[in-house]
Length: 238
Image (cartoon, rainbow, N blue to C red; front, side, top):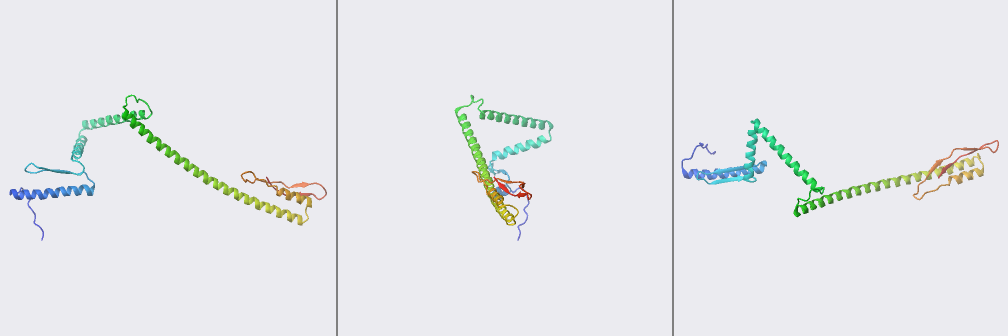
């Protein structure tokens, strides 16, 4: 069975009024805490009893809540007052100029300028800040160099594989040239001395210190030693 509605008016009985105040005060503070946690809100509650006792709750601190409240009220009042709005932006500009001045002074200190006005503690803090920054720079540089070395190693592996593939292809061309010379010799289209020269030229393969193979195709040469001209075919590797 539901509870009946309570008339919202002052409770005349002192005892009942005190009990109701205690219950509803605790309920209000509990709800305020739940609201701050569930909704990530900044909540501040202040309660004065009829006897003058104070009860309060703040999600962060009551001072920060009150300061934020006063600042919000000032901003709201400035929205409807042109003179106040001008003063607000003037204050903002002054604050930004002050921040810029602090940053410029800090930059000069980091560059080693205007250090005469600093005490020993400030100089030690500046030295520690520079050492931390220098360590970060060195770590970043080492990482970049390490990445470049890995990239060069990968490129070296690819070049080595390409070189091996080219060497295999040259060997295949050498075998094809040998077979071509044999076929020409079998058909009797050239003399035995010419075949020997072609075979010796086809075997003339030199490798450098890195195992690189140099390939050059030679043009067919015709020897006018008689009525039947001899065609000299060959593939030179150098």
